[in-house]
Image 1 (spheres, rainbow, N blue to C red):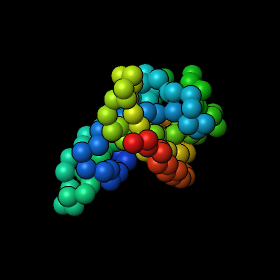
Image 2 (tube, one colour; image 1 turned 60 degrees about the vertical axis):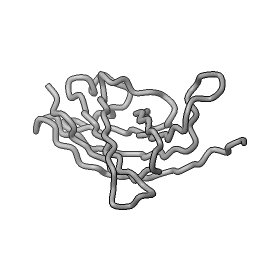
Image 3 (cartoon, rainbow, N blue to C red; image 1 turned 180 degrees about the vertical axis):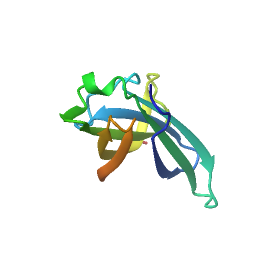
Length: 136
């Protein structure tokens, strides 16, 4: 079984932008299935009219991670390295695809102790932020 929402990541995002959250392997390119790490999010207003708040919830699926590509076995514990990407979506492009105007990659290194149910310690966190060039 898994415990829901073991990890919560908080972001400030530009007001009136639609976030899209994706979990990748630590290369920030290979998608991690929702059956391994579930992701949900909630956007709500803040006291600052320029920003909204985004809460991202990660559900580490204890039964699925030992057989996944993100698991590095270390005896009774293991290390899980993932990249959480938040894209800010402006609107759809003229061809009907989503238009990401900016993104932030958050790299997480987590120690998971399987003997204690699921005990997660964040070992490291780093961020990469990029704004896409927009054409007028």
